[in-house]
Amino acid sequence: MAVFGMVAAFVVIVLLVQRKVQVGLALIVGAVIVGLSSGQGVFALLGTAVKSLGSPNSVNLILTLGLISLLGAVMQEGQVLSKMVALLQVALRSTKLTIMLVPSLIGTLLVTGGAIMSAPTVEKLGQELELPPARMAAINLLFRHGWYFVYPLIPGFILITSLTGLPLSRLLLWQLPLTIVSLAAGYFVYLRGIPDRTPNCPPPTRRDFLLLLQYTSPIWVSLALTVAAGLSFPVALLGGLVLALLFGDTQAKDWPQMLYRGLNIHIIAAGVGIVIFQGVIGQVEALSILISRLLATGLPVSVLYVVLPFCAGLVSASNTSALGLTLPLLLPAMQATDTMLFGTVIAYTSSFIGYFASPLHLCQVATITHFKCQVVPLYREYRWPAAAVITMLVVLGTVM
Image 1 (cartoon, rainbow, N blue to C red):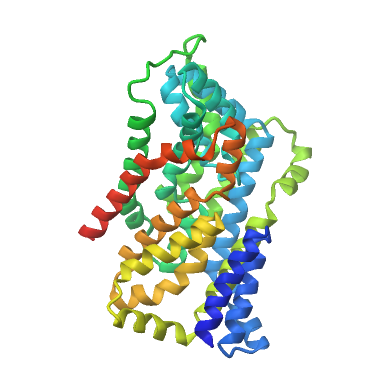
Image 2 (tube, one colour):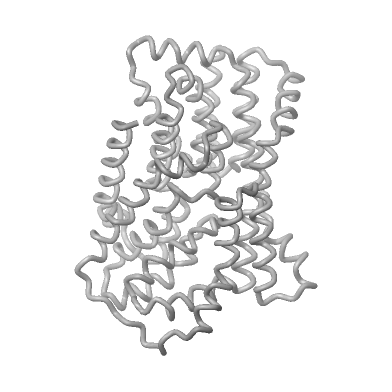
């Protein structure tokens, strides 16, 4: 019954997400199904939920998710983002370099469907380079998401460090090659051999560079405080949020309303759902027995690490949801086979590929709509970067 309940919970979560039910609510429903089918009573489930939400790691995860979305909203509403992009074009003096960096920088804000924010700039630059619509769309998506293998503020990255306990620096080191090959493949496939164009604007001045440093500071200060200074994610993001408020085109009296509008309740609810689901799954003793039996059949653990996260990412169109759903199921296998690092990297990459390729992926839907391109030509643009990432993943799995 416990195994049946987990399968049923997985199916129900996927169906609910497909029907536009919020991810957090869908995960809570799944947690209830898992708990009841494994013999946990209602009061036991409530106790597990309260205990899970009260742990320091859970509080850190939920706060971080909320502050990340808030930072992106404040930078957008305060015109910090638009000024950053304009100064970037002036400073780089290269259309090819700018078309790669604009979606990369905007991607650090992690706004849901945020690829549409960089699409107009990418389209303008792509027209100067005489690129077809499908290629401009692929550039907008690949250079936005290619950094997500090593961007420590992405919710999925925060989730895997929280659940596995692996050091952030170790994960960054092993996943860095995946970012390198994806971005390098994007350049060679999309832009190599295309004549560059110099923007028709005056050369950058010292003041331009100082302003660029200022308007990008909410991003790089948050990263520096987290990676270099070792501060917790919420504290680091508060520093970036203060800078975004100070440098934005809004008055202090308007800040409370702007912060209220920018608070993304859906992302916070997703964090709550992930924490509760993971806590309930951890109470199911049958799970470790099931994993052990699967391994006893001779099934390679790598198959589990690839198939489950990929399918979850493809159907849910969310890297975070896919990891939140499958990583608690895979942790016992990782622990039993001493493949925590290997399994985490494989599972993260598999869920990411599924999420990126999903036709429900909001960034993809918004980009296709903006550039008015067909789905098949866009997917054709992905084939070589995808092959490069998969090849590198095989190499990493071999040497781990």
